[in-house]
View 1 (cartoon, rainbow, N blue to C red):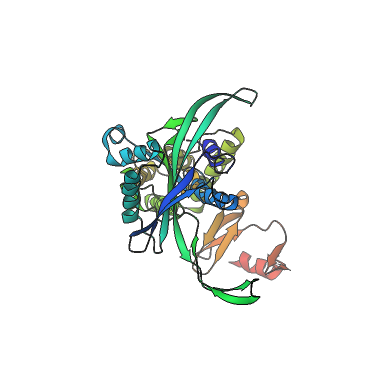
View 2: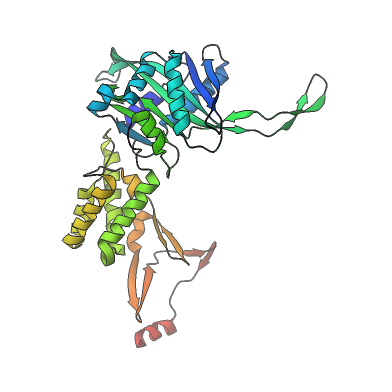
Amino acid sequence: MTDRELREIKRRFRPDKCNAARVVGAYVNSNKEIVYKINQPLGLSEEETSEKLLSVMKKVLSGNIGTSVSEIEFSTHQVESSEEHKLLMELRGSELRDPSCLDRFYKRVAESVKLESNFVILLLHDVYDVYKKSSDGESADSTEMFSYITCAICPVKDAPESLTFREADSLFHTAGGAATLTSPELGFVFPAFDDRTTNIYGALYYSRSRTESQPELTKAIFGCEAPMPQAIQKATFNDSLTEALSEECTLEVVRAVHAAVADMVTAHKESRDPEPLTINKNTVKTVLEAVGVEPEKIDRLSEAMDESFGLGADLTPKNVVAYNKFDMKMPEVKISINPEYADLVSTRELNGETYLTIKVTGPVELNGIVINCATSDKDEESDGEE
């Protein structure tokens, strides 16, 4: 599924676009008990309420594929015989009208989600009449009806009591706190919308957190392992690179990796290729070979990446390389540099000590004050003597 297709489905979540009749769900307390059932007809609700509910559901499609939204793939065996896939198909096929099916789903989610607060499980079923685009950009004949369900798992916060003014008696009164729906922490769309058609072998999984992907939930709903969170992917790649390259993990090498990935991202944007850009161990291998890293260490990194991410895994660049920034840190100092000018930084040995040097190319400010960075004649003479 491409980011373009993701955005196409995302545009459905408006009252004038969406064909959903209602939003159903369950309210779950902190003890994982289902205390209320929800069945909210969108057509009979106030327009503002319907818009806000659809806006909440839409956030399950926030971000790009490979970052906060991950693709889930079902095996042929799962599609043919797994309880998890069967339940998803039943939810979709019943258009969320089967109470028994809904109860089984609510129970699975309630028992597997880890949230500190109360939360609600919201489900929506929509049917999208997919039109084929003609060469002139106009819509042609309808190609299929894409029937799908969207699930949003949202924490509920209790608002504090407040003073409200009543016009009836011109007095202030204390109003009890209300339960407020917040943005989804987790969610999914099933089935996937690949090549603008239905793919029951796929789903999209959303996790707002960059460090926690709730493996118990993905196991309960999809029967598979959770995608590795973005922050964990980055930390894992950094550790693999550091350990495999050892003393060859230098400023020049890391800068070359970042620059190569940044160039790939720029070229991909300019090409307007709808397929998401990915990198793998061969991408990194090519860069490391170009800067002269020892073959044994490159092989060691390839093995580490296979072990951590899976054999020959394709990774989203943003998840493993911070190509859009260039930050250098020590316990006492932090330096942030525009990645386009990373070559202004170098290392230097002086009197047996290692220094980071930054080439001065223009005015330098310290806390907003322009300072003079010119080296005095006396300092130059001292450097010469040493």
